[in-house]
Length: 247
Image (cartoon, rainbow, N blue to C red):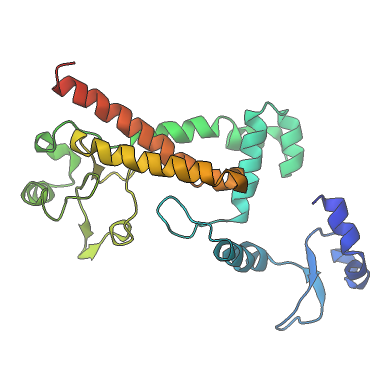
């Protein structure tokens, strides 16, 4: 819905609004609370928190780990700017759409952001050929290294890899409690023995992505980052497996 259509649909409300608020795009009659009945701009808290949270739960929007997606209004702005750039839109046009004071600001924040973020993610993926060959340099201190060697087949072992430090200050990592995937965590390591588990998870995500195509690009964005990381993990593990098999 364009801004002009929104303004036409809320014309009656705008007649009641204070002069300073008449041209604000997002406007409504406050239903409850201190300002009940008044015509006012929709606050960022209402739009960006309460409404988003309700929308996410009502539509069961979840991330690749099965948790409700942490959607924010700024993500739409960031996605719009990045996609416009990737499709070749003139930087000055994007500047005007986003309301930046100078095109250099737009370029600094959005130019090539996808490739840079992807490179950083892939750099942090922990892959090793043999868990028994892990080096002490991966750990913060010797005691953590010794703990891992003693627990790599017990408390440090996961369904698709290993966590080098699952407990911090006596508290278990929230990711482990929620059974989230830890692919880009600095404490996560995986080996060729988990290759099939990664392939199966990738196949499941790609199926979910295909089945949810009708929901559009924003739905796909919940899965694509994890899918891309998984593909890199699988490629590296297949390479290590090939070396171990003498191929």
